[in-house]
Each structure stands twice: as structure tokens, then as C-alpha cells.
Image (cartoon, rainbow, N blue to C red):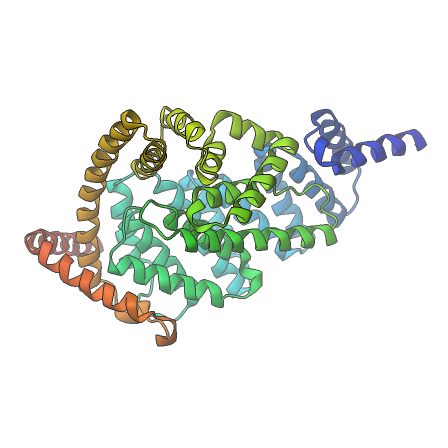
Length: 443
């Protein structure tokens, strides 16, 4: 027994050291140890504690399996927070699986706490929509979102979680390329509601901050706001780490989450000072050296390296790094445009005419594609604003509205209406057709 305790102590010490945080043999020994302890656990609370150890030590596939065990064991232990935690995790793991999402929503409906139920359902549904929206201009998704916006929500209600759900769906319906008046109003209203939520609603805060950071990281986005939202995410991560230490969840690891935030912040280098650039780079390097998942990601995809080269004005290394990234499949048009914009910036700085012309040609091509998608977005905005979305849904305290943004919004509204007169006839036809289908389905 003493020898067993010594081995456990050595393993725990190894895992506590950053350089050995991903020691696979040590993890396997611990997994085996806690599995054995779980088999002889006598109470639901003891089982729950051990299951969390196994969950935190496992890879994603293992976590998917243990999540169900934790959910049902938490029910026996009468631990509502653990149940909600696992419903959210399962919602993230299975966001692509409609039948499992439907089951999770039914399980969430059994939660007696009305606010916790509403917040968790909103999180799960938002995760599902987020995953589905990765395909650009998915007609099936657009119809599903429009149907949900018009049928599944009280558009004039005051329930904050329902309003958050509606706004999230509108943002996804308009698309990642959107930057019109309605899109900005929805994003501003969404931000205010999220900021007003209690700290206990950190899952919804994380969800919004991640979405907003990605939106503002686009080539025509707001780098300052993107960095601000990533800083908020890092603050929540620090808070969660402290919370889990108190709960003795010794193996909960947020290295990957931190890396994603740091990498995105580095992509918005124009909003960072030289000191901030070096601090973030040092943090990324530390994660690279101690975390096998981060190292694998960076070795496979050199985004973090390329962004740092751009940030530190090492343009000769930046160009080949960016060109290597562009060879990879499944890069969105919007990100390709951003990368070619970076290559143009770097090539111009070092008088590399060949790469500058090449990048400019691709940049223009992608701009044309995005412009055509934005025309679709404008039509969607007009349809939603004129026929579906009530103004109270977008209400914001006047103290939170910037006058300059209001003037810009009026200008954009005028331009959109003028440029979309012909398209509006088609939209009116589409609305009438959609309403006719709804009436038929009701009968």
C-alpha cells in the first residue's frame, strides 16, 4: 500500500510540472488508478469526484463517454451544477447530431430551476447553430433559422435568454460576412444582454465573447474589440481555473483554450503594442513547449508563427509562412482574404513585387466573392427588418449608443435601400410565399 501511494505521489508531481503535463504514461497510470477506485466507490458523491478526474484526464472521445456517466451520477448525487455542466459539454460534443441535441433539450426541460434551464437550453441550441453555420450560404440552415426565429420565440418578449437565442440566430442567419445596420444592432444588443448576465452565466458569456472575437477578427472587423473580447475570455478562464482548484479538480486543463485566444489576439496585431506582442508570443511559446495538443496544432498549422512574424515585422519569414497556410484546405473565403491582405502588407514593406501582385489579384477575387454574398445579406436584413423583427428586440439604452455609429448607420441604411430596390420585389414575393407555406402547414 505504501509503495502504491509513493507511485501515485510521483505521478501527481510529474503532472504538476509544466514540462511533463502531457506525460502519456503517467496519465494512463492515473486513469487506471481512478477506474479501479471508481469500481469500489460506495456513494454517488465519491463516484462523481472520481468520474471528474477521469473526464479531465481523458481525450475528447473519452470525455464524450464519461460525460453521460457524470450526468446520471450527478442526478443521484443531487448535484444540479454538475448536471448542467455535463449537458453543456454534451451539447458541444454532439452539436452536429440533431437527435442527441433533441435528447439533451428534453433532459434540460426536466431541470426545476427555470433560469438555469433557460440558460442551458440557449447554450445548447447556440452551439448546434454555430456548428451548422460553418457551411457558407447553407439554404437548409437559412430556412431552419428563419422558421425558428418566426415560430419558436416570442419576438416581443422580455425573457433575456430567449432574446439572446433570437439575436444569436439572427446573427447566424445574416451570415459571417454581414456588416449591415441590423447585424450591428443585433451584435450591440447581444453584447449588452451578455454583460448584464450574472457571473454564473459564464458559459453564455464565453459563447458570445468567442463569437464576437471571431466576427471582429475579420479583415474589415474591429481588431481592438476582438482583442478586448479575447481578454475577457482569458479572465473567465483564470476564474474557472481558480474555481476548479478549490473543487480539487486537479487535472482540469485550459491550455488549448488559452492558445486559441492568444493566437487570435496575435492575428489582430495592429491593436497590440510591441510589449503586448512579445508577452503573447512568450505565452504561446510556453504552451507549445508544455502541451502536446498545442504543439501538434502549431506544427500542423503555422498560423501562430505567421501572425507573430507579421506582428514583429519579420516580413521575409511571414510571406512563406502565410503561403504555406493558404495551401491547406477548408479555409474560408474571409480568412483567405485576410491572409492575402497580410501578404500584400509584407510584400510591400520589403519591395517584393511578385508576391504583392499575386496577393493583390487573389485579394480582389475574394473581395468580389464576398461582395456578392453581402448583397444576399442585405436582402436578408431588409426582409427581417421590414417584416419580422420588432424594434423593442433591439432596444439599447441611449447612453450605450455612440452618436457616430448612429450617423454611420443612417448612411448605410440609405445606401442599402437605394441599391436594393429591385431585389426588394423578389424579397416581398419570397415573404408571401413563405407565409403561405406556414399557413398550409398549420392547416
